[in-house]
Every structure is written in structure tokens, then in C-alpha cells.
Image (cartoon, rainbow, N blue to C red; front, side, top):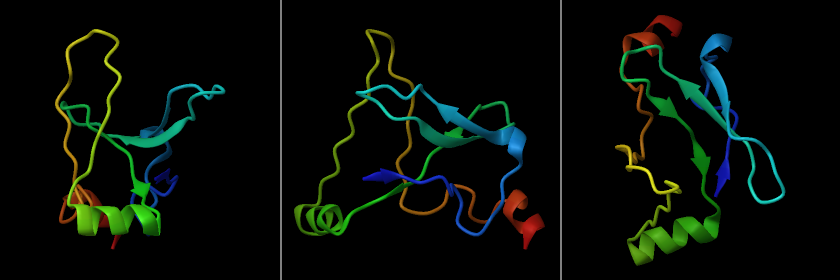
Length: 95
């Protein structure tokens, strides 16, 4: 799975809403993301699957997610297969 810098295909996000999560180290990579200006503070990242990963999900039916909490409370997460902004006013303004 590869994080992609193009968070929403075909849509240029405002520069002040683009963020890089984390610091690149030998063990971890930086994660390009979009931060919502709404009160919920939503952060959206997009990943591209390899053909092998697509095959495993299609025939295995499972997707595992590991989140490092460092002993803190797990925050709500949402995993989607469609753009979370599909049909939003923000995207409608651009088209």
C-alpha cells in the first residue's frame, strides 16, 4: 500500500489545508494528508493498493488496520472505498 500525494484525484486542495503527518525516519515515512477546516478536524489520506493487495482483499475479504496509540485512547477512524468529499460543496465549487 502506498500513500499518494494526490489526496483527491483531479482536485487541487488549498495549500493551507495540505499537511504532512509525521517525520520521515528510517522506520517511518511522512504521510501526505488533507486537514479539514471544519470543527471535526478530519484528516484524509489516500492510499493506492498493489495488485496483490487488491487480490487479497477481493478473495480474502479482510483488511487489517494497525494504529499506534502509544497507550492513549484510540480516536474514531473511518475507512472508505470512495472519496469522503464526494458530493460535497467543496468539490462542487471546483467543477
